[in-house]
Amino acid sequence: MNRRDFASLAAVGASALFLSRAGNAATSANGSDLSTTLAQGQAAIRQGTSRDEAIQAWLEVVKPNLSFVQVTALVSRPKPDAPKELGAVRRIYSTVPSSYPVGGWKQLSGSDWARKVLERGEVLVANNDSELERYFPDHKLLKSLGTTTLVNIPVVVCKRTVGAFAFLCADVVPESAVTEEIRLLTALTAPLFSDDLVPAA
Image 1 (cartoon, rainbow, N blue to C red):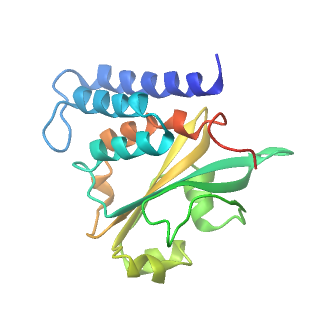
Image 2 (spheres, helix red, strand yellow):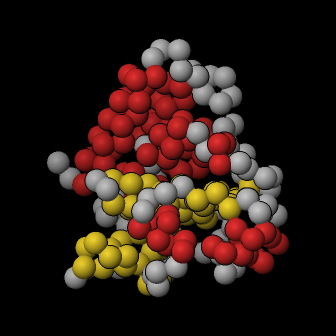
């Protein structure tokens, strides 16, 4: 079994575990059946003919549950000689390539953002000016794109953050809006961050 297949099985397994606990009555934020929403997310990924196409289709499933204006995604890789330490990131998807282009590995410096999202694998919701300025040196650019809230959701496999999505939102988004459903939908994308699809650092 290659890494991509393993990541896909891990994501599906996590979703199935949640559904078994939640029961058949579970519903999504927009009122649809949760299992249906997750199935739609999985289908979007499986049927895409490229990573970009898969992410675009997956975002259509996410949007009714988390309203956003722009999205970027990056992969994260540890240091080759120190697997437990933060290494480098590379943007693999962007709806605003003129401001946030795809490509190019960037070495991490241990910022508050990197420690929270990549090292600890925690969701980050920066929904006011002070939070945006604390976590993002490019906060002026973000605001110029209409960003009021930036939601970072990490993609974690085997206790390691392999990537993360950044949702640029025009409205104030409370932390409670990042529901378990959205986290599970994000977990389904793990295969898209596979080494099979990402050039080596």
